[in-house]
Length: 193
Image (cartoon, rainbow, N blue to C red; front, side, top):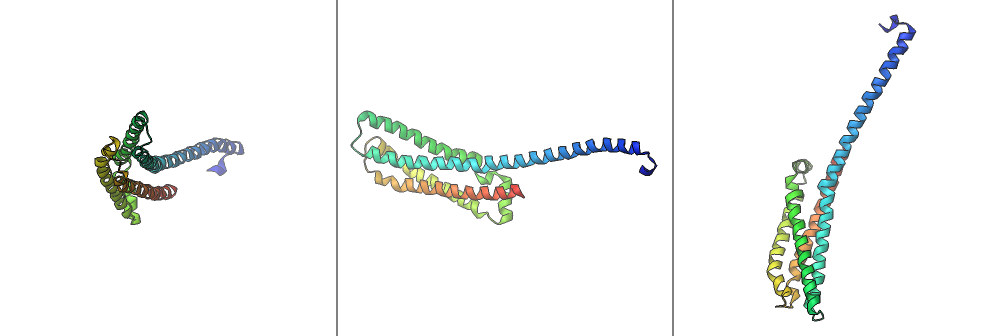
């Protein structure tokens, strides 16, 4: 069929087909780049933001230890102690809200795609470690909450009874960060493949 066309019409046909082919190729490239962007946005939102928040929660736990040591000392004036107690309560509340948000938004068992990927890779143990770390956090927090008010209100200056609980909370944060870093690695590999 093309053999019967004159040279001019062959050029005209080429002039029409070339822009159409370029437009189709551009549209496919744009679609693929959007898919990659969505994959990496999902990676960021589902794995990196929880790590940043868990690190902040761990930092809050360390701040609580420092503040408890200061509250136990006799060197604070009444006003300084009141300010420290107010700051302590805020930091404690922020730490608790970070874990609550983690459980509501980022816990791996709520992410079906990640759970399926972990099952395929045989890494369901990561979700077990996550659950155990959250249980350890709640256990430490429950024990800590009962004792902290005695130190805060000044009834007791024995801060050492709180340290094992805060240590358990800190270890739970460390495990959660470690597990989420592994989740991030798995999600990144999945996004790249």
